[in-house]
Image 1 (cartoon, rainbow, N blue to C red):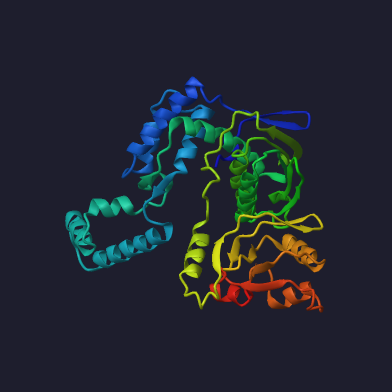
Image 2: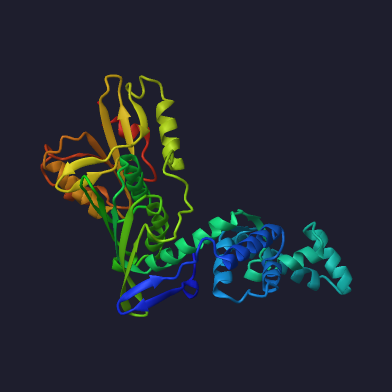
Length: 398
């Protein structure tokens, strides 16, 4: 993600306009090729060595060069976590103090004894003392990227950086493909965003709360919202409108599919989160008797529950007779959607839907309060901790 100082935009009256780089821009492609090669060659070296190499480029101080470099830095994996290095450093200091107190010795003897204590050369110990400082961190791995894709990611990141500072975001999708629209809604749910959905024959409207609208102004939520945006770019026809706060001023951002931005995410086809795959595998490997004849699969439907409430199930269960039961999960940020779903299902929705609720969202008392006293109209609902278990779902599959 680009930092605030690397965002390039212009402001006219109350509107903000990101500054994009043309995908075939000669400088951008030249910088990208150079940077990808330099980062790829930096594996096993200190970050300071990488920075020194980057500074050798005659245009290393330009915003475009630094923006592209920041995106590649995010693709680096650095050796050792800060906690491990902190513990290791104190071990070195403690042993060094013990050696100094053990008697007189030359510097060479001290270095040799300290090194033998840890079965390492003294020079290596010295190099790792401050390895958690940016300039001393060792680049363990780097995920390469095609130079042309880096340019597209730069353009996308210009928008993502602004969305990170949004109060609201509205999206209109005019794709005809129902599968792509369903996938988009699944990604929306995967990123656990606060959304209101309205679907008609011609368009899909999504209204999202931005991080600045939340009570705690969560940076984590803003990051999820920004990371969701490249999914929109996978659609053929789209429009977005966002209210952005910069320097205490509210500005409007408006974009559509005519802009030169390409998503760096893979296509929607076949995308299933890892924990979903694991759940489906565990459920379906139970004996037929244990799973009561049901089979689990990824949810692929968009369910109209009435009252302008739509459910995008995470899982669907089907038995030998073809009966289908759906499961939708609600996490920490989904309280508004959960209330909407409960109200819609109370109104007499014929959809066979089970609701799974994270304990981080509600406890048993709050859930009981939400459901009210009438058990007759209450939906099938249960609370889970980290992720639902097959046992919890099977209790609701008849």
